[in-house]
Amino acid sequence: MALWPAHWSRRQRSSAALATGAALLVLALWGLGIPLAWAPEPIGSNAAQFAEAARMTMMLTLVSGLCGVGLGVLAALGKLSRLWPLRWLAGGYIWVMRGTPLLVQVLFAYFALPQLVPALNLSEFSAACLALSFNVGAYNAEAIRAGLLAVPRGQMEAARALGLSRWHTFVDVTFAQAIKIALPPLVNNGVALLKDSSLAYTIGVVELTTIGNRIQAATFQATPTLVTTALIYLLLTTLLTLMSDAVERRFDIEARMQ
Image (cartoon, rainbow, N blue to C red; front, top):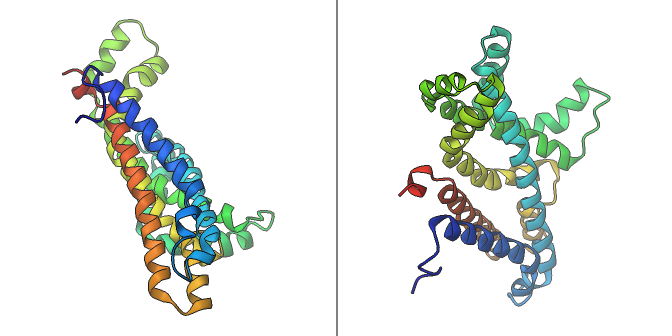
């Protein structure tokens, strides 16, 4: 039996799938402690900690993901700019972020950056978001740049011939299509970001990996703790993947024209 009514359009089905995925994600984040409370020790007595840590992990992912998209757009535009200082700056940013380990970037943001800029007083959460945002932004920049280059130049020339300004041509024609082309790698980067957020435990952010390590150290029961941590990550990444698939179908130009 079909999940959605047969008379629904592809757009309606994808929108319903996205809404369902979002509802399941919210339900998982705020109801996770209920099934975990029935789990054997040491999981049951620490169910609330796991649930709170899962919400912190998702908060890290959402904040860093949104900032990373903004940084990716700016870096992509900079790399395609006619001004060589902007190209050099954007290229250098992408080169450094993609060429160094994320763990080093997280530690640098928390320990070294305040020493370089004494007025900058970052909390553990802020430092983790900063490092994760700049890291995923570099990967997003290449995806967006590829999307911008994939838009046929003839469409821009046609828009200009119709009297559209450069700004409206870029926003309504070029960038709108580029984002749809770049959407699959962008959502993949977002899912990968959720797993990369586990590195925030190195600076004390109380997320899933941190809670798992604390419970393991206190109880000396590594297997149930690590298995539970891995299963929660698997649940969150699965729900994010379902939502990202719905977003891709929602903006799939070729499929919507069929």
